[in-house]
Image 1: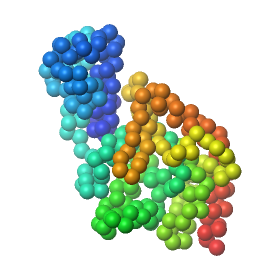
Image 2 (image 1 turned 135 degrees about the vertical axis):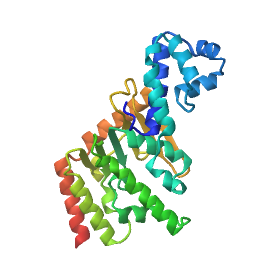
Image 3 (image 1 turned 120 degrees about the horizontal axis):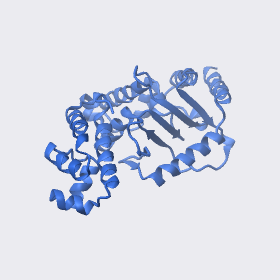
Image 4 (image 1 turned 30 degrees about the vertical axis):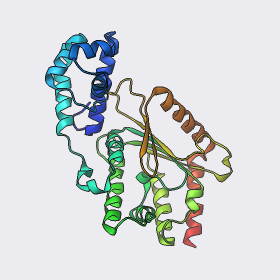
Length: 288
């Protein structure tokens, strides 16, 4: 785990490793509670890194687990998580509290799987398309709209970062290609952009045809985030976004269910070559 990872991912590493060490040592949470003099909730917060452990707590825990030699690694990562800054902090007014965690995890992901049934995924949107989508909320001021556009475009940096760009598998319902967002020029630019992105080696872009029939994700879109190899034992996380909150699923069986849905969608969707042809036809219609 490199110290340059996002603070949210560093916290996830800390919690995951503390839980794994406890389980490998054959210790119950009740034993940790007794050793530290903490409540069950407080121990749980340590294992989800909602609460970063202090040096004395780490010393007690790692000694209890028989791994005192791991202390330097934990101290380094705890310090990095505590001091870490997020690029979107300057846009705090545009980031709901429930979305902050997703931004941090997305920034540290190495693989992203997404299915979108209503709009082009945020990682693939042009500035004009993003603005048209965001302006669907009439309560937002012009300043708030621009902040959210900046936030959405900033997220796309994971596709171009020099150190291990993210690997993206994106499936878009065909109806999205024909649902107007903004004016004709906005849609034409967005479709042309998708065609170019679909040619990139680390982006697999597929279109789910209208005649694909029933599928496992009929309730709406979702994203699966996978993390670096150092996150041993981490199944990843599923994110679903609503109007008032984001929902996270991270239990192995929950993640596995969405992975099966994604696998099935990839089979039902047009292959990459045919998807590119569908995008070109949609673009030609808009350009007429």
